[in-house]
Length: 305
Image (tube, rainbow, N blue to C red):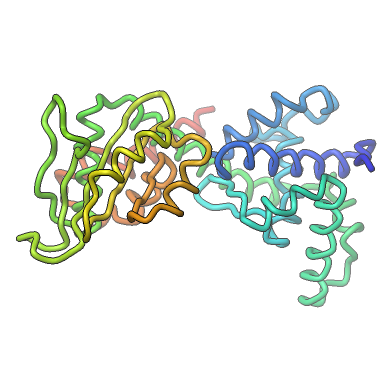
């Protein structure tokens, strides 16, 4: 049974469902700004010209309405949002196997139960029908979410512009911010598969020993590289693979099921860890990626626009 997209409400739910599918095809998470670009790329033909116009403040109508309707899937537990990034949950992956209509109906039912628990008077369909009345308050909420995504994108662009060994230094700084003692950082040239060696204490007498492989390339890292890292881990070692381009399909399952302890850190996870440990960094390490100045530069850019 196909989803009717004759109404704006139906279209917005369909686009929200499309967002889930895109997330599923992209390792389960994406920056909101990139996700919106991909949705438009795939579904621009379905979006009426009137919905491609903008509200006062510069936010595109279809995108604002889709974000509003996506709350169905958030409350249903299929989707998580935070820091400008949308993430598909395990429940979201599983429910996608049931098809679009089943996903939407299940999401609406769970959302309706959620509203009922909080003694909401309006029925869900009535609430969804009011989406065309999205007011400035609703728009301002999504302005914040969009700004977070823009700020995150600016930070990631800044990191991608770094030279490989500058990024390696940034990774070592993150390890220090997480209270590990960095014993060694590889010099240019062959490194035997280890770019950073760190310990939990200054003398390296307490396990675990952290062996870090850093890749700063445009191509996603794959399972052969993970096998190489796993092959040099001994008892008491943790292998950390940091890839600014992310990981190919199947890598996370490989790491999760491996007998060796492997942790995979892509760009989103790296920036999240940097944010969480920023206040614990030395001033010298902060200068490698001055988070707040980049964030506020982005904020100024948004205001200028």
